[in-house]
Image (cartoon, rainbow, N blue to C red; front, side, top):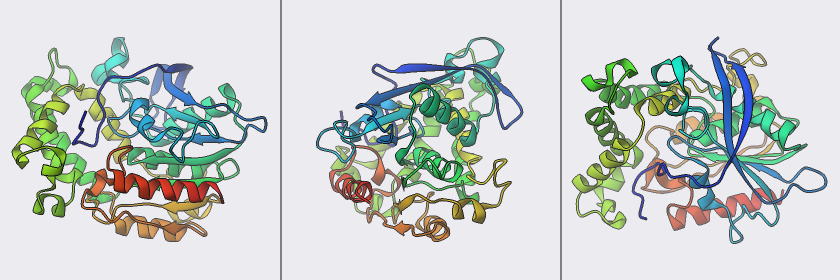
Length: 347
């Protein structure tokens, strides 16, 4: 199926669940009976050191990331043990939509990227027995999680490649997200998250507003929507509306809160010292923004890469903007990313 958006369908294939019990979160709240959904490809080697951690992105799931995994890819299961943990709030791991009782729906707790990665660390080291992470990688919110892996566990993570993401959410990125959030919450049916039927008008407005940010100005200027099978931009916007109308509003907002509060230095180890946090990364690093990303900007990535010892900045040059790095989406951009992954994995 042609997918003109930066999100996956809600369909998921086989996955496993790691039951974490009650998680005390950075917010001071508790995620009761936490469930971390994940899928693995390949086999952990005898040294337990061939693991690649590949977290999911906003609106995506393990099937979304699977589009970059295979024998013809740098992420080849014949060589690597690839673990894709699902973000809390994505509808597969613990989320507002699949949590019963007062802790579900509008009562779902606020979960940070730090909370996600600490739970993933338990999965990787305790359940799966990994001793070294050969690579932490991901796109968009997956990149944010990969950054946190390298910052929090420098003795564990050997390589880092975040694409179209940052180590913390910038002020402008926060404002962009406030816009799509306001469009959703303005629907009277939303009822502060205690809706009895889906707030379809708000979900459609969310998707329509988001579409203008996902691609670049050049994408629309040059009519690249036609390359995606749309006769005009209105058809593209309608597709985004339809896609978001099928999603759970509280799930979207739970992940959005996580995104807005992302900061790899906001934890007990670094206490908000962002320079010290990124300076603690020892992983061999290639940072891959898109030069026309409207919200995870090249300028932000340039600043962050300069703080990581020995890091290389290798941007996509693409009018697809933020969507340039979406797993399995655009052949030219995916070939560029695959070459970088192959090169990094030989270092």
